[in-house]
Length: 433
Image 1 (cartoon, rainbow, N blue to C red):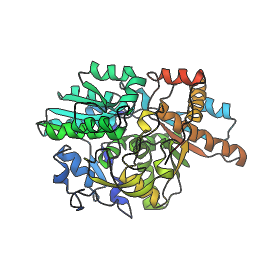
Image 2: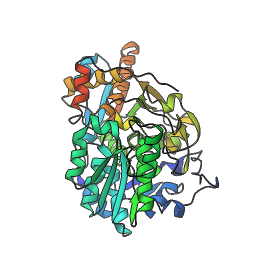
Image 3: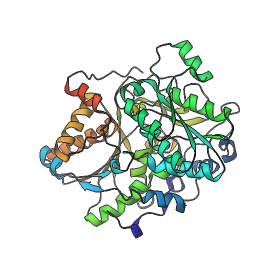
Image 4: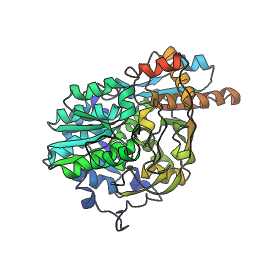
């Protein structure tokens, strides 16, 4: 743990240090690059400014946000001795445990500043999408903390699979609607085309953006993909750097699961600055589901961030904004595209990606639970599976590599998924590109 004086007081903006900056977001009508003021009618003005900032490497964390961070930060850095022993690996495995905060996942790290910035500019209502529900739960809590009303569109299949996350959101005062729904034009159009559509983050984003742009004094917030979200999440990696130094080690390999990029960027970007500025060799690995493999099988091109085409055009690795992901239990990873920063870094060879089948991820999660006594979220299971792959390579080579991964959330509200795995009912859906 870090004492209060060691807690980071700034976020790290990797865009400032990138050799090849992310390509600009485009207005879909004019194909002209967007300015911060163009985004400010959807996002809080400060978030819009942070989104496009490619100049300042360090952004001050507001004092009010720091005070809220102190409720649960720093989060522990733990060496997984029992997992190492079970694998018989010479690797040293560490994990940053973001599951210990009151909402159970890393998502609160960005929910708090987004709600703070909305409150500061006089916004009264916020809206968002959520998949597994971790982001929706975090935003519901943060909105209540700053006195805002909150409306959440949750992916319909995830709402059915994880009903207690909806309960958490409602406990904090949010309204929750399954997406696609009949409450928006976008939702009605999607249901008309496909009455049995299970929903995706793309459909939920469309509905949330529509609500934000048609409701007075309402702003849209989101839990991944966009650059300002990854910026807020760098509190994870900045803490991990100091904690690894206290442990007397430095990671050779850094791993996180990947949906849109927030927890991967949050852990990896502070370490990656040493690669960009000093040439330090670190193997950065994003672990995504094999049924939704935008980094390993997608194309790098401009695409919408939502199904209806309401968002700006984003330069990213994508499976196409109309891609319908399989109904896997890792609801937070069922997204068609990758954030613009990660997409550019992958394109330039600073990182790599692996895709993990659903049953392999749950086997890894079960082993982690039985060795480290923590039941991980299905999303985090992908990072654990990738870590196990790398640790087993060290058995073959005899290398004592230091591996660091992000445990981005716990699975205590995902036990129906574990039941399905333990009962032999889980399958590995094929990717249909």
